Length: 253
Image 1 (cartoon, rainbow, N blue to C red):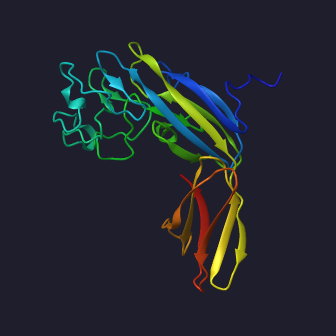
Image 2: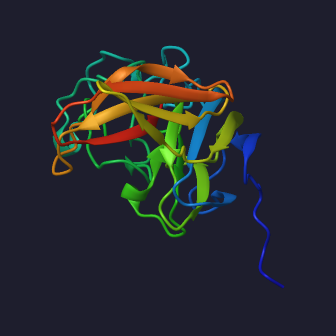
C-alpha cells in the first residue's frame, strides 16, 4: 500500500467540485499533490448560510444585509464592530461580513488577528480558504473566495481547502470551486535592433502579464504592455531593448 489516494487528481486541465459549508480546518479537503512551479487558477462561486439569516459569498462578503438582533455591525459601514486588536469600531469590509465572532468569542483559524477591517490580511468568516501545508498555522491559509492564480511551491505540495468559521453546527449549503492547473510558461527570447521579443505557449482563457524589475533587491515589478489572454496558441510580447540592466518575468492573473 502507498497510503490513501487523494480526493482529487488534477495533473492537468480543470476540475469542479463542491465545498460544503461544514468543511472545517480539522477535516480539510485534500485536493492532491501538485508539481512545483506550476500555477493553479482557482475560483469559488455560490453562497452558504452561517445560520440566522447570515448568508455569505465565498470571499466572506454578505449576500444581503443582516437584520439579526445584535449583529447589525456585520453590514458594511456599520458602527459597533468589535475593537479588539486594532479595530476602530466601524465595519469597512467591502460588502460587509466579519472576522470576529462575538457570540463565540474569537477569530476563525485563518487570517490576521485584528479587527481592523481595512487590513488586507484579515480573512472574513465564511470565506473559502486553502493551504499548501499539511499542518497549517494561521498564516499558512490564503483566501480562494475570489478568482486568483496561485503559484505552487517549489518541490511541489499537496493542496487543502476548507471554509473559515468558529462554529459549524448551523452551517448549510456549499460553494462550487473551479480549479485548473496551468503549467509554468517557458519563455523563448529573440532580439531585433530595438526590441526584445518574448514568446510562450499559452493556455486557453489564462491571463498573462509580462513585467520588468531593474533589480531583484525590491519587489517593484512594472507591467510591460497589456494583459494577454491565452487561446492555446503562442503568445508574444515585446519590450524596448536598452542598455539598462534589469529582469523580466511572466506572471499569471
